[in-house]
Length: 115
Image 1: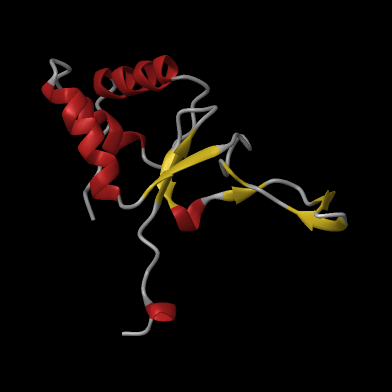
Image 2: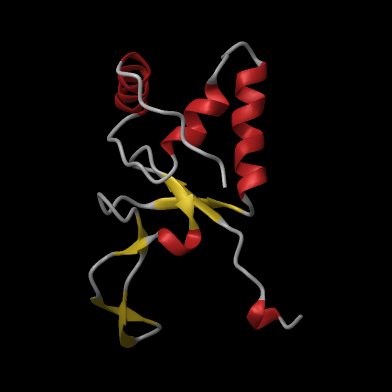
């Protein structure tokens, strides 16, 4: 299999918001002219597709979820399920995401199927 045909497995997650998803889902900031190495270039940065916040990345979803599992194992039951639920959703803070998750549970939202 050639490198060009391999799927990019990176996961991006919010540095300024509570969002995460596949690298293919990221947005981009509006193009901006900047000077790099004495030459003007037009650049755009990857960002949250909802709010435009800057992102960080993990090499794979498994690596990203391992961090969530480690946190759950330290006495935070249900954290992995919460993180899985939050994929693709943007919240300003983790607390707002947790409130939406709790509300979903009380309103009987059907469980999301894993793909």
